[in-house]
Length: 222
Image 1 (spheres, rainbow, N blue to C red):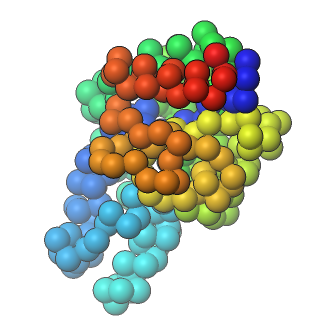
Image 2: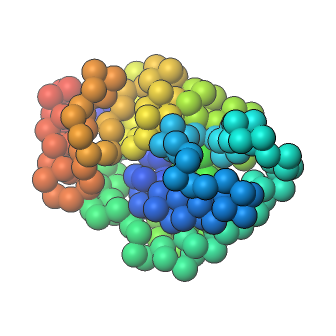
């Protein structure tokens, strides 16, 4: 084993492709609050704290509503949507990527903005819960992504230094969170690679997994 010993995954947008489901839930809630979804730039909030999103939107649109009540409603709606569609939204090749990293001797972690109840159900249903040595969820930190708190927390739980950990993230907020914690990040997204990313892959199909393995070889890891 070389420089990296741990791979830390985000959940939404990396292990499962849940963003469309979450966007539909948010649209339904926005309409119920008198806000037209097309008037809201939600891309800036993807991968970040839901509390921050709703607080910002309420302030911008003059909505007098209890943020925590809306959060509870949103999380319940998201939970039901994911449970109903889980098998259809698994990121192609993710199970193979996880197993290949484990075969290389990597320890795995999970750092996600989703709440613990939903995360545990998802990992159990996908049969991968026991593959992760440590997990940290959005309701277990004070500040969500793009704050580095969630990654600093999982580093402590894993007992690892930043130099030993490779992160898989999809969103800009997630990337900012990981890099602010001093971590090396593989971006799972379409488009051109930025200078903040060690590597960018569109998914975890065979060609993308090969790119990850080649990157690890280039770092003298395997």
